[in-house]
Image 1 (cartoon, rainbow, N blue to C red):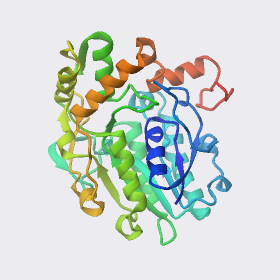
Image 2: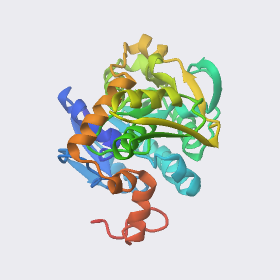
Image 3: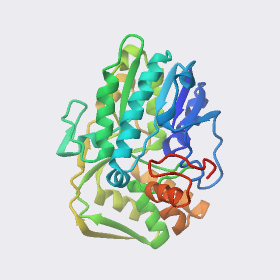
Length: 342
């Protein structure tokens, strides 16, 4: 199948593209390049690609594809809080516009990377795809809006599916250090401490980047009538853990690391446990990676690649990376390139 992957130079896209290619799909990337240089270890081999801001994609750039996998987004809650309107412009408006253009261009399948954070504060009970959506951040709110608006244009010629990923973890050549497990392992390696600023009680569902890629591959290849215009949680019930339990898994892996739960930021209202059985029932998805295995993988890769404090805090953390591009004059206040070779 001829597939366009938006955000192919991001954390998830860099892992997903070779998995799609190994399955025999003809993959083209589309990315604006904000994080293309944020590489830890050997540089990845990118597919043929189009460099364009998501807000500027044209219908002609989408013609000839059988499917679009839409990963591109401003993916960070602190960034969403700092620049909510830009988050909505890119994550919501540009994503819906992309879906409309894809439909006009004759693209049949549209796979959208949503998030389990749409459930917000859900308490102790497992939530499934029919649970009330309670997004607590502009990032999560934008995902809910895209699901609603894209579902509204689904028909016999245009089939979207919404994959609500649990919080990602695991190594990618284009690392993200601002997601919980990746962050805790990095601090343990660099400082010897696993520091939890909340009280450690919020629940988080986690899923490895490679498992997310496997889930998208299954949805891409599933009969359309099985997944048409449906939302699915992507992850594993065994990876529903509290932040304190996630932190303990890091202590168990990183030699000499000490756990510190400071509680200085208080209880995090974002707390939810997720039921992943529906996607398992429909397409047979089973997550392969446990949190402990991901912590061990990250520790090994961080040590092997010589992760530094400066890179961990800037290049591999979304908000500082974008602030750096802006400070250097490469992007403007609206997150558009001024000098696109930065």
